[in-house]
Length: 167
Length: 167
DNA sequence: TCATGGATGTCAAAGCCCTGACATCAATGT
DNA sequence: ACATTGATGTCAGGGCTTTGACATCCATGA
Image (cartoon, rainbow over the protein chains, first blue to last red):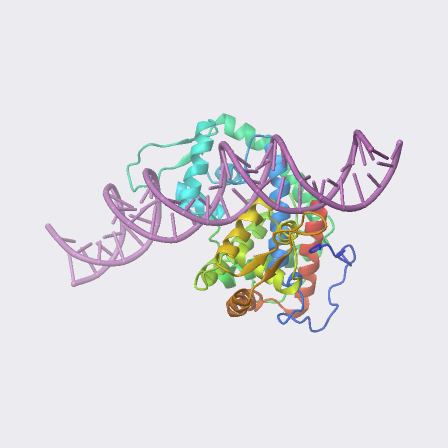
């Protein structure tokens, strides 16, 4: 009556090539599929970030926007939507929340185009800096059991999967 | 004014150890973080599955439930919630949709406990079988550029991250 | 000049998902 | 027998996200 509770074996050891031919698709169990594990890991990360950010009165998309705006001030609503992998409408809702909380400011007009640049307020900067610690702690814990030299490959593989699906 | 559009370099090549010490955390760019890439890949997969399953009149959580029920008939609402990484309440909504579509049946009573076992109907089996092809095509495309011997490591790493966050 | 296409912001409706809360049921220990 | 604990199903409220649609603004080319 339980699902996905098999103890994941060999997670602290460094084994690079175990099975010469890992059967990719006619897998007997859904939980063996890459997509399933990807969703699982993503859900775990989302949950951990949710819990941690709640203490800072931030949601995950709100934190994501703050982080992007800190590195690239002046991004527009559409830019933030792409950067956080949501629709423009969702980003708009998130921005409204951040505006109401006084963490960002958005220009009401522009001399060229329609994109309205968004900037962090001082309060936004401060909130981000305190919340960032909690988020970084989570990411540290998440990757602490992954061999350092595999992290590069992991980033590349995640990128390759994204590119293959988007194209 | 764009985010995350840098062409991901080295995605078809097989490089296992590039940087001896990949700086994990004080990364200059958010997009270099594992969590960001994880979310990105997960979002891409979710979008691709959404588009593919729409032709079969199924949502991603609905398909996930069908897949789990095909392999483990008689799972309860709470079991499916755990298996699809959502809350019991969300799973309940999904099950209602599947019930209305005639793809599953759920016992109305039980002789022991409160868990009401769910089973696929013939229509549910057939719908799953046709939709499965589309989903498998997506997963094939997603991993087609990943060296086969790295897939095992990828699964293990995703598992390790999940375990580290859940514990 | 005008038309077309692409990108952006916005509104509306719907669905998904979450937390909080409550009641039910079985197992356990007192 | 009784209380406690844990798991389950369910209801209510709210937040997030999506698709669809529409109007605005710029760039491009006829």
